[in-house]
Length: 117
Image (cartoon, helix red, strand yellow):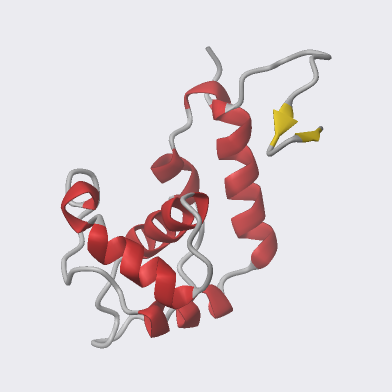
């Protein structure tokens, strides 16, 4: 099994550089923000408010594998952090993770929401 095949979401996103300055107002770990946002988006969250609400609703579950030293970030925090991220770096981390968890299907046809892909 290659390293890519065993890559978890946290491992993949941990390679993203934190664009924030180190100072007293940095209350949340970057990995916590990224994992919550990705999970919320996969579950249908649309926008920073819904991502924050999802985080609050699933906080106990997230605490099983994230540190969350100051709880769930606010919607404003999610927005500010994602404005600072380098899109190509975030995209590559997500692609690496998706490739690691995707099961090769060869030339089979997969229906997604009634559409042929």
